[in-house]
Image 1 (cartoon, rainbow, N blue to C red):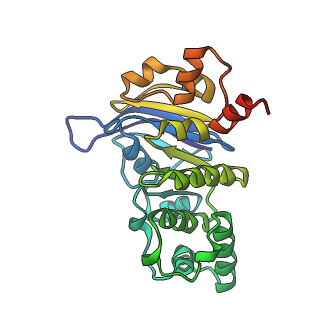
Image 2 (cartoon, helix red, strand yellow):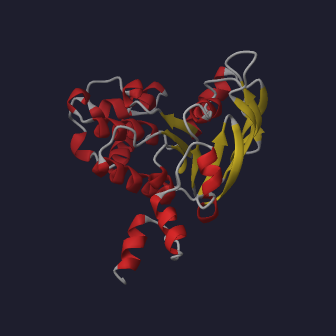
Image 3 (tube, rainbow, N blue to C red):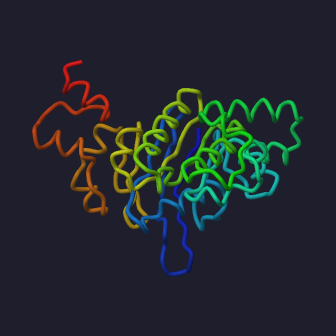
Length: 266
């Protein structure tokens, strides 16, 4: 299990960006971290990855505090990995398949194992047809999927996704949501940040709400997203499906697809 225990972080000595944050990221779930701009979401993700060192508290993996030594982080980041909001930050090679296999090559895996894992990752992300294409000719959404495939090839236990649907059109957003659900079913646990409240409601099993660097509430999906006052106080809106439920006093659907199925009487 991945945990954050009483973490505080500051970019300067006067103002804390994260204040006494504690979270447990259980396995088999998509866990959402919600908050407005400046709430500390991206900073927290970087702390979890060991890219930033907290002034107080610890990141704990499988019951052991994550050491900051180069060797310890090397092994940790094979189990816990992150895809940044901008895929360009993680794409380096010319061809898609070469870029997906880059991390494995750097880790010294045999060519046969690299090929197997790259093909497996491309299949999981439905991008097998892109393997021999130059990255420069891909759409923004395709580049995001390639960046995720590159991390997925490492077969991490936890995958952190920072605003994975930012810049995507509605079709790309739907594909990304389906991909995340497929990854969890295949055994990859996901930590997700996003401003897209409808996406978060659709995908998350459990969620935390950050406001000004503090956790103000947490809980399972149905209870969490109905705390409209807390969401609004944190600068967010409730998902449309929750607003409709509260206005009409109808049964709360699990997802947009579930809502329309019930509407049609299926």
